Image (tube, rainbow, N blue to C red; front, top):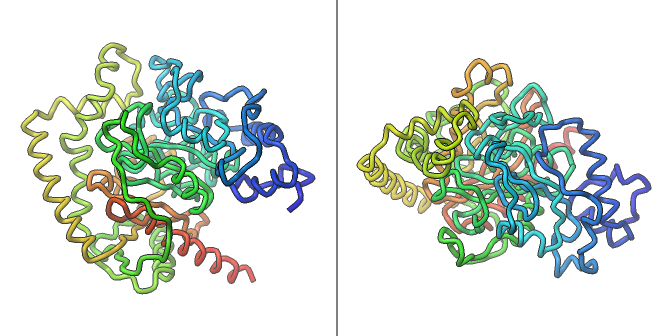
Length: 451
């Protein structure tokens, strides 16, 4: 490969950038191009802070993509994850402060050669799945500006979808690493709980929080996950997993039975029908016990964990929270310690049901989202569309599962649609293998239709 005469034509993927670097492109030129793409996007809602570009790449070692697998890749970091020396707000101006140290995930990114371009916008305190619960300008969906970008990691997903960065970090508690990926047509990897350290992350529900990865492909997402994963003894929620690389795609695939297939419109149903055709051998299965788990998150005592995370700050700073965020944590007062224990007992039952389910199947494949709300619909109802977006995501962390969102056949109206692959803790590699195989089938189908 030769360096493009016009760097504007260079896709920001790991393979393309590393090939261009080997041919003589400089990281400084990539940083300049990334800032040009930011300006061209004309979307002030994507980033809340940008690292000064001057000298950003100066500390890189000599080009060695084996020792430094993310060498020279521009990345965005969700603004509830600490980047040393840069402001962190969690989309709340009153919370703004400058961390002295990188979050452990960011430290690992830098050690692998990544360039932190800036801090990305989000639903305030990572509370929401729509991506517009921010006092700053909301990021615009990269495909359909009249639709929600998805949250809470909205800026991170849009930055990848627009090709401004090669990778982005988000967080995922109830779907924030999968919903915005699906709504912007990119890959979202939500690892097994504890596989990636959350030290240096502003908690939402600390027992459920994950650092997630956004990427243009499954392969790039996995390359980033390999860098991030590993036990961190300084993080009490870090948990080691048996590490394996993606191999053969798992064969025992479940999909929701018709009674558990909750899709809001014809285009979504058509996209799912096209997706099913690319999952040969998948078996329909009842997943009602899994879906019912989600009720514990916002309609049960786990909402109190959000109050534990930032309720004291809210009490000390009246009026600082977004109105919807404030309304959500206000419901925490309804729950008692007795309710919390009863919720734990219910969750234990749901987890046993999940264990039995995944004894029969290797992977559950579901539509990533059941709806694709417009901004107008969300303005009319700030809660309903958000709750619907979490139909196939809210239960995953509660049940200690891993997940991977992958673009699938588009809806007939041209909007992106996708599939989320879900498996038991430690199945990350199996999900990546199936996700890569599925993405290849989608690409082949697209070429066949274009021919």
